[in-house]
Amino acid sequence: MILGILGGGQLGWMLGTAARRLGIECVFLDPAEHCTADLVGNRIRAAYDDAEALSELARRCDVVTYEFENVPAASAARLAEEVDVRPGWKSLETSQDRLVEKSFLAAHGVPVASFAAVEDLTSLAAAVAKVGLPAILKTRRGGYDGKGQAVLRHPEDLESGFAAIGERPAILESMIDFDLEASVLVVRGDDGATEVWGPIRNQHAGGILRRSDCPAPNVSPKAASAMLAHTEKLARALDHCGVLTVEFFVRGDDVLANEIAPRVHNSGHLTIEFAETDQFENHVRAVTRLPLGSTAARHRHATMLNAIGASPVHPDLAADRIATVDDLGIASAEATDGVAVYHDYRKKPRPGRKVGHLTAVSEEAPGAWVDQLITVIPGSSATEPASDD
Ligand code: ATP
Ligand code: MG
Image (cartoon, rainbow, N blue to C red; front, side, top):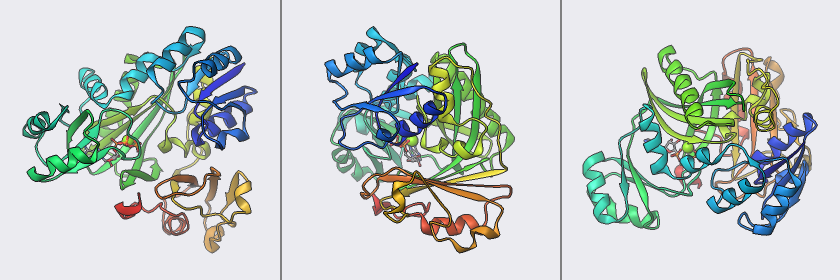
């Protein structure tokens, strides 16, 4: 079995690591000079719309999946003519365009923030009249880590906000005053069988995920079961195969879906240490038609911290896949019964760039230990100033 993966970043690397464990070889397609995934497979270095490269990938692989949803539509269509692509087209097209996505969620009875389509300044004014202020203007396509977004607080912000997102087709959403953000990940097999992880609490700053905790603290049973039910329903509605992530805003017992990702997700990285089967292995299992593994928890608690903009490890250590807490110089680590593992992506640090993540698992609620870890993981604080990116 040979698995093709579009994208060779950290998600591709962790997918490839899981595939190896299952005896599955990976071939990546990515135009970058250096890729984290080069550690775990062969790569075709070419653009995502390079017809010849896509044909080569199709020839060499039994099935193709992707680590990001912005796969050009024409490339996905071309690949699908020659090889099985999982998840399929419906999951891709729904998650590529925020307007299509929000409309899909609403049509399936999943509550969302009120929204309106924006094409120009005239429709933006109409959207503000419908949605109210404050609101968030987001490009329909291509955004990630909060890119392509502008917050509108006052009527005079419309013009500058539209200019800030490049005057592109957009969606305006009302600003939700949430208690917390959470995600649920579901993996769905080709036969419709599912397994879930979460809800996981996610803390962002400057539009970038900084920290995730599982189980999510302070989520009512009612809100948790609503998120799980919505996520499973959406996976079915998309006839999804593989991992699907749904991000939610939680306010008391109420939940609003923010967005979906038809793939493994940053908030699910903690499943590597936390769950019997992690998101990467189960995604590979689903798309290669292997039976899914149990997602049961192996620990009481997990916290994941993203390293953003700078590496916490000494350059000599970065050659290893994983650094231990000792490598990070945290003196009191042994005083707890937890374990922390740092995953280094070998990426050149740039402001706002995720270069690694640390997961701490323990048999007790996260306390001073995690607070201490935050101080050694650059960019992981949820109170990080927005100027970071
Ligand atoms: P990511 O790649 O991290 O998923 P993204 O660029 O796809 O991010 P969103 O998930 O839509 O963008 O937004 C990023 C963050 O901005 C959200 O997690 C949330 O913290 C905040 N945000 C987005 N939309 C809203 C909203 N309508 N109300 C309040 N906060 C919002
Ligand atoms: Mg998001």
